[in-house]
Image (cartoon, rainbow, N blue to C red; front, top):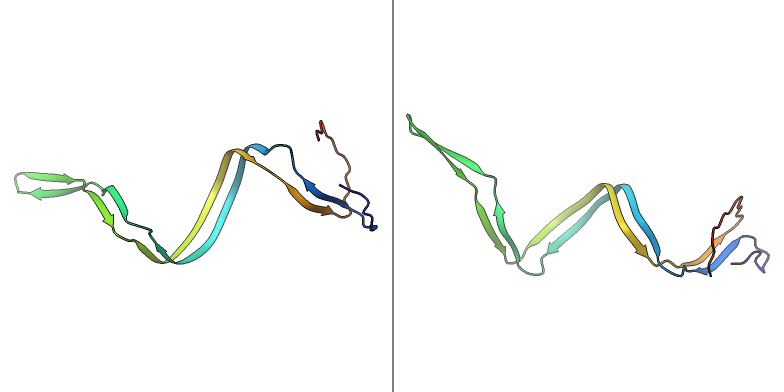
Length: 130
């Protein structure tokens, strides 16, 4: 860090700043995320697509014989095998009300930061280790 600049420019400049370890945050939460519509011309599977045990909603079939009646309940289960799957003209969009990530740990390095006409009224630092 340097102040003032040898060329007479005022401001704070940092060439590179890197903490000794990764930045750790217990949790990060972001709300109201909106992803606009994205257009994808074709999505093609890289191989076969298998859907095992696909279950349809249980349905009843009534049989009325006048004096007596029956209801047969059916819950179909189907195994589907698709050799190649192609989706065409796909539009995607997303809305996320709240996203929370816990246990965030990431390395941070800051390069080439400058701030002109920076005013610092108060700075409190409990410990600095270099």
